[in-house]
Amino acid sequence: MKPNNNNSCMDSTPLPTREGQGGGAAFFNPETETLSREQIEALQLERLQQTVRHCMNNEFYQKKFKEAGITPDDIKTLADVRKLPFTTKQDLRDTYPFGMACVPLRDCVRLHSSSGTTGNPTVILHTQKDLDEWANQVARNLWMVGLRPDDVFQNSSGYGMFTGGLGFQYGAEKLGMLTVPAAAGNSLRQIKFITDFGTTAIHAVPSYITRLYEVMKEQGVDPRRDTKLKMLAIGAEPHSEEQRQRIEDLLGVKAYNSFGMSEMCGPGVGFECPEQNGMHFWEDYYIVEIVDPETLEPVPDGEIGELVLTTLCREAMPLLRYRTRDLTRVLGRTCPCGRNHIRLDRMRGRSDDMMVLRGVNIFPIQIEKILMQFSELGNNYLITLTTDAENDNMTVEVELAEPTDDYKKLQTLEREIKRRLKDEILLTPIVKLVPQGSLPVSEGKAVRVVDKRKVYQ
Ligand code: AMP
Ligand code: ZN
Image (tube, rainbow, N blue to C red):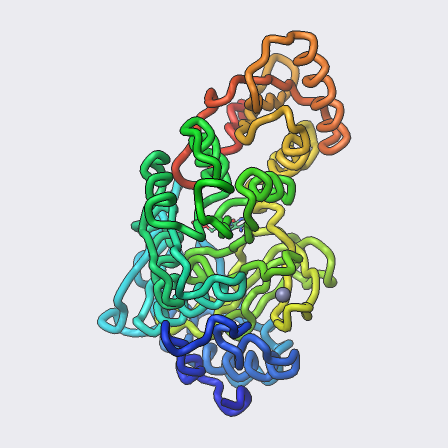
């Protein structure tokens, strides 16, 4: 296949089958994964023009284009993407449930919905082609990190509306692996599956992997000795490089960062390659922009900004310049692995996760980064914000790795944690060292911050 002559997503190379592709092949979709930068950009322009025309089937976009004074014919170069209006989660809420569909509802075969804490939930619609492309993206990622049809993939992620379940399920099946829909929680059962089925790879949120390890330890199961595990896909929630390293050390396997969001499809949007130097975002499926969240102007490569994504292959519900609220930066556009799809740094968090305490901006991941450097500390922590008579305060509760009643040692440790945290976040929190297993664990994404501050009007 010549990529330049074949610009419709669905005409891409026939996907390898379980028998079809030798395990030695480096790429799952060689033609699209190894495009040069020029080829990627040519393909993106063509697909952007198609997508924009397709959006004109929908009233919401017709109105937005009219307000912006543009038509699809104004998209002549890739840089013209900046002429397009942004879309936001609020747009999805305002058009709930089906107001952003660009195809008739009878052409859709699935929806995913996320419940909103305020207002309407959001709904994401999929045609069969959208689901096939999504599975292809996930399969591509898993192949990239060395998984092959002989592997056994255990998906320890919530199913149902949470896209990490079905997203990885179909992707792992498309690759041809024996796929175990273990779902989240029930660690004893998870461990039984891992040992009985010879699981070689697990997908889960990072906070759950550390919990799983603790239960393995309690059960006398040594992941290196008693399992065939060789890799983990971890994602869906922010985590620090330090947490990843800790997970790799505990389980003795590589852990690859996986980024996704329901609005784009779900998992599969970005994934680390074996270089583990940023996540490749698949630019044949998305246009990636990093903008200043205040001015909405592009920031230079290397600078932190808000990730903005435009879908290039989605039929049911394409999204133009979707403001993800996730903060990251461009690390590079080439890679020794042979893929020239853009590499983005691990997410710093969402702009909505940022805590402002006594005028200082703090992300939970900054605190995690410090905690994970102490081998005396366990994996679970909780940040609580409160107001006392004079001030807003932060309390960091963190579990100890091993029980101890050496009071002096604990005091020294606490002092040292405070000092290191102050260097990182510029204020000194209250630090409480608590026994392992005493902080809440959630089955889905970890809750790291509880904000009990009084809001003064
Ligand atoms: P959802 O649509 O519910 O799956 O949530 C998507 C959001 O989860 C993203 O916008 C990110 O804020 C977060 N997320 C997903 N994957 C990652 C990751 N690998 N690292 C950090 N945050 C992530
Ligand atoms: Zn790479």
